[in-house]
Amino acid sequence: MKRSQLLDHFSADAAASLVYGEPHQTPDGATVITAARVTASGPDGSEVSATPLGVMVIRGEQAKWVAAVDANRIALVGVLTGLLSAVIASLAVLRRPPWPDLRRGGTPRGGN
Image 1: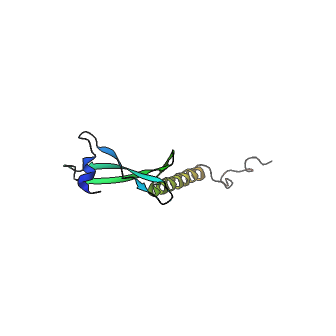
Image 2: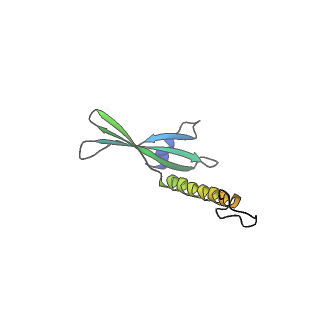
Image 3: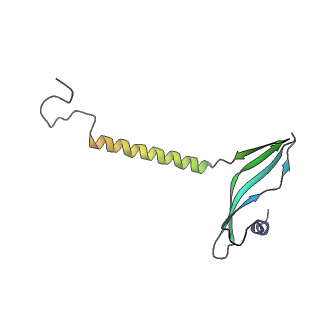
């Protein structure tokens, strides 16, 4: 699609619109229709970006939605989860180290 065709799909009020591609027929008889979210930004709306959402696969009388996978978002969640677990583990070690407290006299906790 050309930029002018993408902009035709926008309503005057909407900042983001759903855009559906033309139906494609596969050799096995399925019809595939792509879907994307198109956003316009910039002072005059000249910057157009599209984010794929997925495809609708139609075989006979059944339709199935197949969502697009955003690998960048999955990677970001993995990195943030690892960072959070490292911070929590570091705080746990700093607040109460796993080794015995040698500054106090006597036996370690739980000992006789």
